[in-house]
Amino acid sequence: MTNSDVDTDADGSLKERVETWLTREMPIIQMHGGTSAVRKADPESGEVIIELGGGCKGCSVSDVTTGNIEAELIKWPEIDEVTVRVPDARDSLGGPEQPESIMGVDRTEGGRGDWGSSNPGKDHL
Image (cartoon, rainbow, N blue to C red; front, side, top):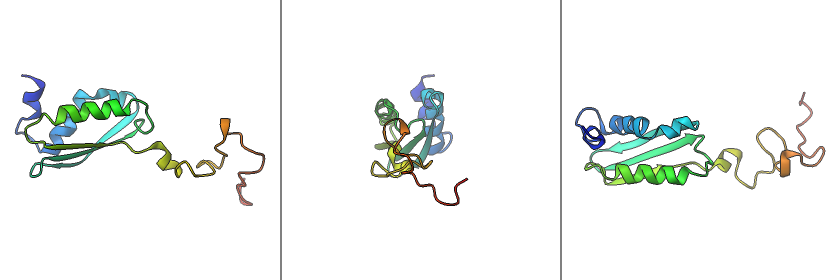
């Protein structure tokens, strides 16, 4: 039995089969601390949306992983459109315009910043 025979098997929902495929065929995601979630798998429209997170955010090869997922899943007869989203790592930190990191340390070279510019407030321990 080939991978494609298993992928298009009628057992389980499309979402379950895509999740199983991701786990089996893309172990690199988990091996590198990433996560994957099937956000949508509509057998009526053929649309599948997958979101990668964890270590995938900001990973330099996430475009390669995304392309590989899209290229393989689009071969399934019941899938007409594949979208793989990888959040920008800067989004979780408030974007590139955020003056401070979430830890209150300036985001300048080396994280050193200017003395006192973080101003953690009077309640800071």
